[in-house]
Image (cartoon, rainbow, N blue to C red):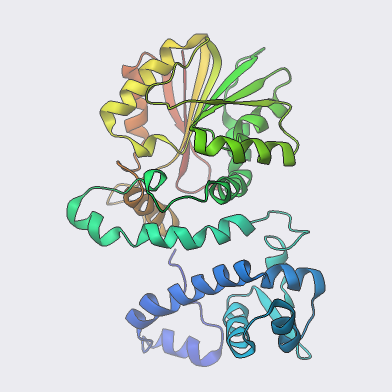
Length: 346
């Protein structure tokens, strides 16, 4: 898979087929412009306005949103090429595809995640430095990183799209009552497991900056009845009392091998006999693996934005075994490329 460069008309198709298209220009300028167009449209309220009031002409849309008419016209054309908007009889509206993600009636909202794209650009800009120094930038601790509420909403939207994989494959023990969701942020994954397994409740352990917004998200989305939130740093916090199940989602890539092994040993000490653990992560592929545009890019992203890197299933199974867990193994699904759930038993 290769992001972008899908011809939208005959001349473009011919240029790509004959290899006449200037790929360096398209890769370094077209891709970023398209990405920024989506971010700008969401931040300016274009998607929401089109979802509520479309079809609407560009001049009226510009007037209603107090935007520059000419810039908006050009923005809409870029979004049209990306299949987010369509033009009929001089009026603009969201495409059926876009309505899935944007607007009040969106089935899978990605409004916050799209808005969070802007600060993520600031993170990606660190690639040049990381490439030289090898030292990633943990954005959680940067002075400029202040919008924790937007970050939490963004992660919540993303988690809803992948929670089915965790819920379907996490081996919650029969009769389990207590799940610890370490660095669980908004708490959605633990809540989804609690909804699947009657009697189970989830406790999110996370840093103070995350918890205020996390509690609001849980209440607003109706799952605060099965989730509680506790302040704590996973590097030093007490994980007790003994737990029936523990979930670590998208967090261990922030730490080196020794620290991950230490964390998992402390988790193991806080688990009941027969309890289960699940580690949900991006898996970095080996060099000779087939190209995976999404997985490879996300692995690089987390290398930039953390103190460590994404790991392979063999790394996690090795650490789990060394920490005293039994039968560690990875679960994958074709619908969730580059993601894995590594599970084991206490």
